[in-house]
Amino acid sequence: MSFYDALGENPMVVQYNSDICVVEGLNGTARQVLLRNVRSSEVCSVCIDSVKAVDHHALIQSAVAKDAAKAVWRSLILVNGFTPEQIMDAQSRCTIIVRTLSGKFTVQEAVNECDLSNF
Image (tube, rainbow, N blue to C red):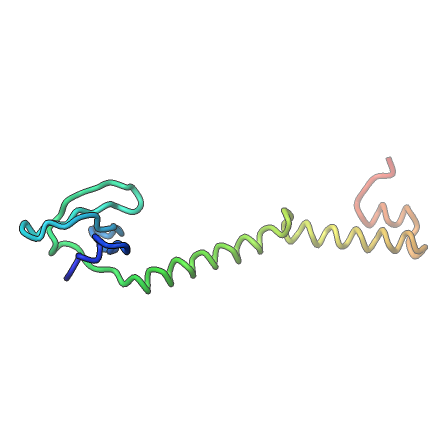
C-alpha cells in the first residue's frame, strides 16, 4: 500500500484500531507511518502493516448521506423554530379564529374549542 499521496495536496485517510486517521508522514525505511486521529487529533507512529486504506469515495458518500439525514431530521423537528405539533395547533387555532370572525362560531364557542378561559 502506498502512502505517498499523503504528502501531497490530498491526505491519505486510513483506518487504524477502528479509528479513522489522516496520514501525516511516512518513514519508508522503518516502515512506520505517522497518523493523526480525526476525532481526538492525537498523533501516533505505527507500523505500515497495521493500517488499512479507506476508500475516499465511500468516505465522502457516507459523510454526504449523514449530513443529508441530519438536515432531514432537523426539518422534521423544527420548521422555522416550531415543532410539527405546534404548527398543527396554530393552524387549528387560526381556523377557529377565522370561523369566529366570519360569524360561524361565537366567541364562547371559540374559547371552548381552544381550551381557553374568558379571562
